[in-house]
Image (cartoon, rainbow, N blue to C red; front, side, top):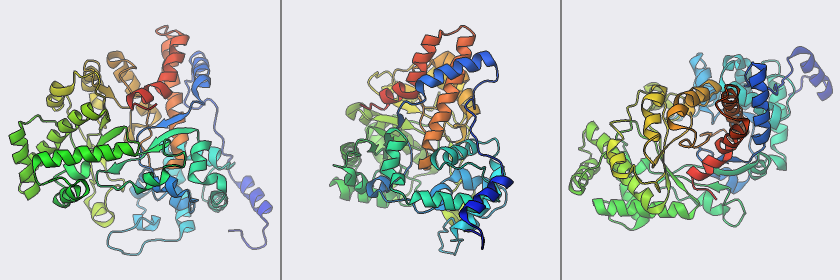
Length: 489
């Protein structure tokens, strides 16, 4: 909002005089050594404009189905992004002040301009973080802003972004094209009716926006709604989900339903990497205890482990790529969970053991070359000791990229340095952004491309790769490996 008596032009001149220009250095994230930097530049020029493949993320399929304009800068950039509001919360800013809705209906701030001003006033907190890189890229490249975000420029940002969001070129489908996104996968629970994906059929975007099958809602017996979800699963499929065979049959039907809506992958967000291979009678008895609510915590963990192995077998049958995401201590802050629910920035990486825990699944299915299992971790201490040796041996296993807390420049470099010597490049699957923040997707992929070129340039400078080999690898890490791993045409 302009102050009284000031024209838009005068206001913009005042802002420019009082603030720092927003610039993105063309050599950002490249090495400081000029020889290696020159190699990285050449590699990057060959891959920087390749299409984006985003095979795992959490964008809302409703955006693409309805293709409506986004509301405002705050609901677009702040409220869905736990990377942003967790940092603000860590500095004593209440989530209520940021407009995060409470479960009990207690009033929270609804003045989106005021919330954006709070964000702008504290933007300095993001110095040195990947969020700063992503957000500056969005501000500069997507919205064309020319001054850095600060308390003084908050209203300029808010008004400029909002003025652009109402334009046709800022509708979700137009942005898919503008961002050069060839494919984006959303993630839905097993009971989801996929109505938004169904709405996309016939639009030409049904092949650009696909779903991913995430069955945590019907395999995690620690959930309060587990028994109700199993009953609902039976209603959706016509199977007797109170029996072990009927339950497995119902899951196969839901997988097929998701495949009809484009899914090529499943996703499993388990607390640990425990797997199991129980006899059918043991598995059936364990399932009944879980349904009855009498299973111990150790038994519900065992059940999740059994279901990972069952899902691997189903993937071998129907060809879906299997993603396993263990190692997050979910909802660590109980107060925040009780007030606001899950996914509010309080998930914390936990130590995770893989060698023994994965053995039951890998002994049964790990030697199947036609099976694609992508393993992610938040425990970096396991990269060289456990994950790289496992992926460097088992044909079914590939390593997902550094993700979540580690999809930063330093995190990506640590990953490449620790896994490459044992697993190589071709037992990894490129990059995925794993985000709800739709507008940041190009920036996130650009960071990954720059860091991979930086790493490869170092190998060339050390005469461990030829530049031609590095160029081929840059293409594969950017585009080829992800399409192969997720079986995308």
